[in-house]
Each structure stands twice: as structure tokens, then as C-alpha cells.
Image 1 (tube, rainbow, N blue to C red):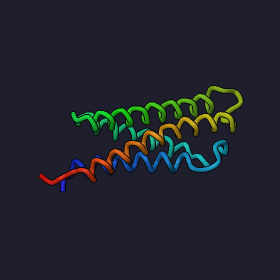
Image 2: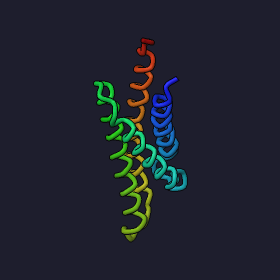
Image 3: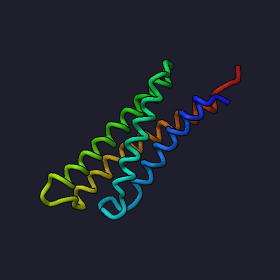
Length: 128
């Protein structure tokens, strides 16, 4: 068993599941979307992105691209949340929350592509 592949797969799947957990629920209901879950999704996606830098294959490049997209979108979602909570006089409104969740949903799509790539890579792997 390759420990590096286990850690890589763990962070790819954890990033996707945290992102999914954050996105699930009514898009504009502030009570259903926990800020700490969003921040955890950001942190784990950044870790997954860092882990993908070492792979020099074509599929590794696509893995890195999907992870960069997810991380950038989650960072933007967190910045929108911070702006709405601390800068906007109206506070965190359902409109702001809908924007945050829709941006995070885009990141979820990138994470799903990354998981699919991981599964395809694992299935096509042949012992040498």
C-alpha cells in the first residue's frame, strides 16, 4: 500500500465531502450553512491542492487544475461571507447567502470532477 496515495485520496475525498456538506440545504437559508464548515472546506481544498503539485503526469495536471478551481471558488465564497458579515451594513442576508452557496456549488462541481479522476486513475492502475 502506498501511503502517499492514501493521503492524497483522503484529502481529495475529504475536500469533496466537506464542500458537499456545506452546500446541501436551501440555498438562501443562513441557518443551514455553517461558516466553520466553509472554512474547513477552504483549508482542506488548499491542502489537497498542495498535495497535487508533485504529480507530473497529464492526469496530475488535470487534478491540479480542478483543485485550483475549487480552492479559488471556495476562497471567493469565504470572502463574500466575510464582506457580507463585517462590511455590508445589511449584514448576511439571504441574497448574500445564495451567492456564497452558489459559488461553493461551483467548487463542488470541480471537486466531483477530481473524485471522478481519482476513481478513473485507480481503476486503470495496473500493478507493475
